[in-house]
Image (tube, rainbow, N blue to C red; front, side, top):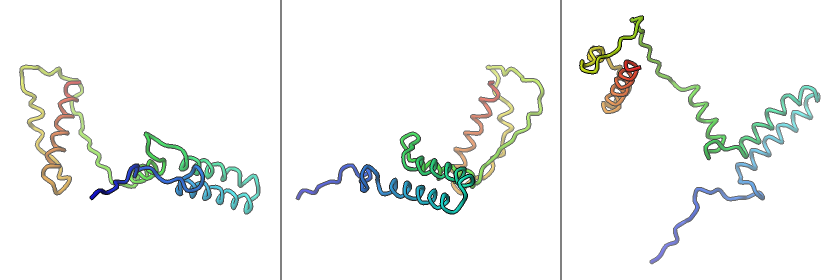
Length: 142
């Protein structure tokens, strides 16, 4: 028994002329908000408010960054700005840079024994600690 496998499932259907449903909603929403501001406010107050709304509506409809829709970029930026961030600061106590000897093992990295617990996964913690040690080695080489 043969079954037909759907093709092009990542391409959205064009419902309203050359626009998909999402694009049509973005355009109608931007046009509706602009019209409402135009009717409710005097022209010299409405124009500065209409321009960013029209620009956002057009960007949501047509603009793509790295072949991703603009709404996905906005969502990622929003999540980045409200999300928790990990800042690590290590005070540099030496004023002069020492040139490391290639024959001697690096003693400063052997003293680095504290790794903060970031997650419940030991594998992730180990990966993070190796990344930190790798960054320390690169900083010492520069």
